[in-house]
Length: 90
Image (cartoon, rainbow, N blue to C red; front, side, top):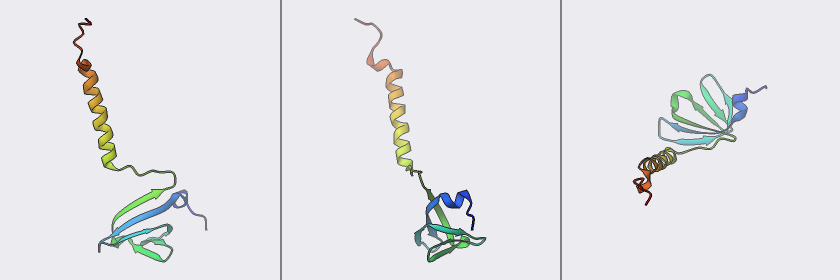
């Protein structure tokens, strides 16, 4: 069976079901009605959320992104205010 580039790239999925269960597995097949893994099959109708992790990708949490943006904004404010100098020099 010749897998598509997308299927080869997937290493792990985290599925939250409509019943509240969480299942983590490597996808072995993408069917018309479900995702299959070794000893697990989750119908699309039962999926409430899906997280896909691929090789070489790093998950960045939203809090980290917000923290970086806040730090850059703080530096911009300090630089824009002249760092406390009024330009008199002496």
